[in-house]
Image (cartoon, rainbow, N blue to C red):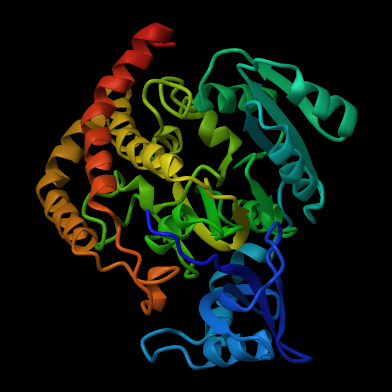
Length: 423
């Protein structure tokens, strides 16, 4: 993989007092060269911008000028913030319900401590924090929680390996009306939990809320390549997914679960998730299925008639994996998780099979279009909207994704047999 310079990650604050620029939480200090910045307008996440500054230049002024002069087909940052405020106004009128935050982890005490510090700094007025230690080999996680976070973080041990099993253990231990989930490799914005939980107070039919995920670092070629091709971000436009009004631009809805959000930043109404049966323990990282636990839960809640909201004001900074091997594993896991979760949905919810078959022809046509765009190396900068730099998605990673998709159903069935049917 070709080496390329690191890209600084920052937050650009626009508002009274002029532009202010600072490194993103968890990011190294800014250095002359390329900078990828989250644009905040009056505190709200509104856009991203990719720019370059040289020694002697004021990076805040350089990036603010770029943000103000974004292409005509892109919404200006202030307009983005105003539109976001209008879209979320009904949700923010009510106080957020009591929430439980569940973090599943396995043998990563250093990154877990960083995540816990950010979660303990949340401005949500009424929440608890639960760490689920999944199939631990050592006492490192238990010792960290009990010695470093005593009386502030609850420790739960789950010996069955797999992210879904760990999440289900967290669900069983949680007492909140809203159950929020994030990973041990994130840093949560102080307003994250409030922004994620508040929409539930305004909409009784809401079953799930997902949020914005941005990179904490872009220091290695693997991290830059992943973010260049979408990363985990779903943009800055709020969106409501309603099973009673399927979106016209998603022909496989509700089976296009990957577009709804990601497991590193999601919350469920506790009653809705429990009625849906929780997470399928034969899916997720740590099982033969390799992934798909979050996607299964999204579809399960939507299939029960609940709405899902994407709220970009709920922000976490994610530490992408650093090496090429990590990226290969991720590509294969994405493919496997996709078809594993579809298999899980059909096995556990066979009543949805006619709906999937009815949507399949249009869905395949849509998928071919998306694959052609990636295969043609049309990926742009970081992220693709900026479009001035080229980090082509290697064909080898596309092949790994396809191999993972072929493996996914088998992986799910292996995991299910390993756990015992129906468990």
